[in-house]
Length: 430
Image (cartoon, rainbow, N blue to C red; front, side):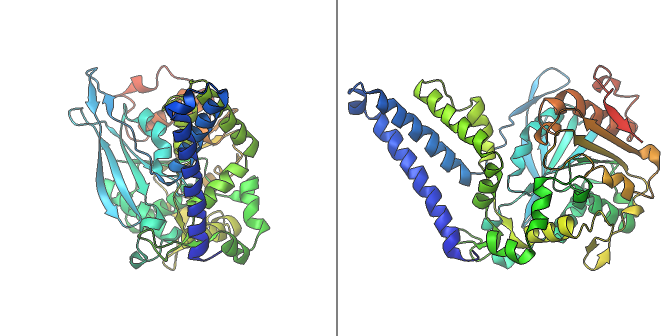
């Protein structure tokens, strides 16, 4: 599989399907075809509409689509997305609202590098903007990064996060969502040892695989069913001449998407068939529920081969974070060195990606942290997506997270209204 030919072949298949969809849509929309009165014409056009959009979205980075936020004065303030730190494999962004009084809570969201762009967390960002100054890591598509920029593995990822934290200063709260949770924990431990004054005020770990063996799932078991050699041969390919990263070894986004969709193939198939029926009846729009979800879900990015393989080998197979033997640049990172950063763990009862217990294992690693600075929340009936972007996040988890931030930054007395009317009965803490 490790050839440009397979990478380009996959792109050609995608491009051909997009072209077929565009052709069917154009033929169905031609006035002469409509004059026949044959209902099949509408079905052909509907199939073309859905097919073209589906395959076109696979190579487009979604826009953040956040134009304004309401301020304390009741007015809408324009949101500007500014780049604070620019690096080859990822940037640090700030969602700034000029004219609005700066929020006291400063939150860094560390987005996962697991196939989708950081825009997957759009709803999370939108939910936090009214109450926080929001920053986020925006990882780049590996196919667009020249080979001359070098490698990027989990050690580099960890150092990037540590650098972003240093840049924002100690009055920031860090929220790691899913995949980066173990690496953000490691980055915090690095700061605890090398620059204690730069540590964040709190760390919120949301559904991350700190210890994949704590409660195994199909996702975590996959890493044990195949050897590293088999995995490399199965999924790693070389970027073709069409992109700036020509020659870079990657785990292609299209291959990742095929893996994602195979996990719930029947659900996705039914969703696309239903959308074709709705399109034929004229019941679809650019921003309907189906398109709003799949425009984001289908937009995938390549990961560097070394990042994907080192994640599987060291986080899942070797359990280096769970065993507290993780190393960066040859130096062991001791999670026990974290002794002042408040840590909260959030898990979903129905999470089938990072099952309950996997993220909770972080608290056992924090041997130097007082129990008063540890907290955990298990959200009933919530799946993986719901704990950071769904109804469970909005109604239950978000208020708890804001309250936890305030309790660990001295804002409780000054800003009690942010959490006073919201439920907290589901929280669990040590």
